Length: 219
Image (cartoon, rainbow, N blue to C red; front, side):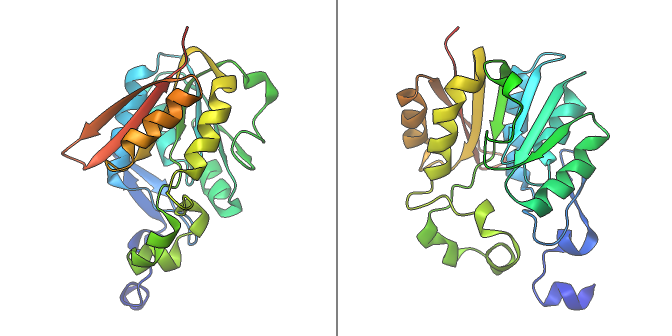
């Protein structure tokens, strides 16, 4: 284990788990490691979720966000999806015991059609690192985490654009889309949300150095 760590393998991949929102989340090699700043995204989503709410964790990775939401919100009806097979395996381990259903595919494509127009809280921890900035990331992320979980395209917002465009069709009236982004990108993310018909607002946490953009579908 020490040899693997000194070689640069993320500690969470060596241990097989990461601590997130007080939970032990299964993480296998090749899967994005949940960041503690993303706990702010969970807090914002919890504040918008009622008991038995229909919640979707898109770009779910290991399912850490969905697992945390399920631990805070009673009887949440939870769905999750990711394009990475390894991430889907982890998410099924982390969410299966919480009643969550996990699908493999690109964004909304694998979700049951019955969810269209009924999602109350849509959390999407999309990749938001600009392609040219990947080379400046720590080797733990750059080498050992999947690029698809990091690379947000030329300006880092390509996947957010696709999610926002689809969200207006999948959200229930009054439902909300939440994404994590950087402080520098937040204004443009909010503009993207507004262009699709969502009402945006930006929330920040100095404690976690985290920024979340929330877009609400009009009632």
